[in-house]
Length: 366
Ligand SMILES: [Zn+2]
Image 1 (spheres, protein in one colour):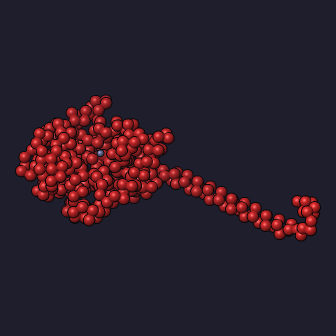
Image 2 (cartoon, rainbow, N blue to C red):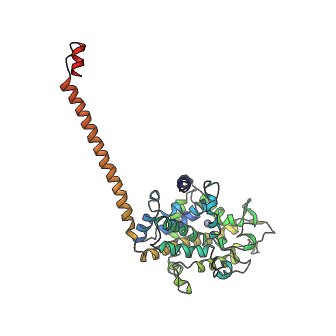
Image 3 (cartoon, protein in one colour):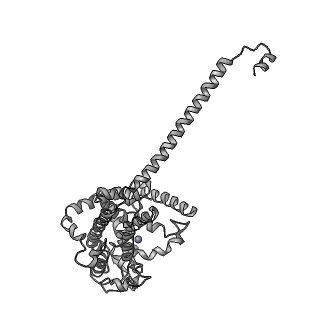
């Protein structure tokens, strides 16, 4: 328990420090952008719900903890108990067969096995169900919300459903504008950082405003399609994560794993990419960030529609208010006591101030 508290405090500090950095990795930028887009689309019930289920210092801002599932698994960001979270590592992706160009839930996520569904698709299904379950305690639901915000972001980065053979693009190395990187990092961080640095003065908040404008103009007609699962049996779920990963698999074959000459990229050959790849792929990165945000908001709004304990935090608020009131009353009582003691001493000094004539008289008065 103590470890847990230390770890939570450590995260809060690491996370708050991270916020002050203008450009972070995918964790700080990509995930934060997806969550910030979603935040603008949450309805009143959902805003109340997230405010009540996240730690107080977030003020209900889901982007503040969007990278928590990444921080907990590494020793540099969670030295205290990163080992305890290693089980969650495989929940961040759903790699597919090389050049299959489709996602097969059965094979790629071991869907029907009792020990299966340990991938980003399964984790989204698990945490939507858990978040909707009012029988779970506050800590479990807060964890479900933090995981869900992050994993819906991951499900929209195509290389989180990359090929098995190259570990989702991690083993494919090369140069992007002359700098060493790997394909996975290129999509996680490098292209987004370049975009923010070059076109938005290194300010993610300006980039967010741009993406929100794109969402309301260029993509306005697509939003209802993006949030619709009805074309498959996915409609029975709260989130259509299978469809999102099918989209990733297609993007990987069509664009992500192809170089500027449309040739397949592989582990055996280093890539050299620049302006052409950046111009044509950055559009996809932006569309996926917006799609992720729109879908995350839709999922949370759908969950809170049927959740009966939106006002549960009234209990929390009542408890918090009670503590504040008790402290306030205590403070008043202490002030009254101090005031009374002070006046009494003063009165004693005034009424009893004797005119000492000799030592013996002083002793008799005392
Ligand atoms: Zn992740």
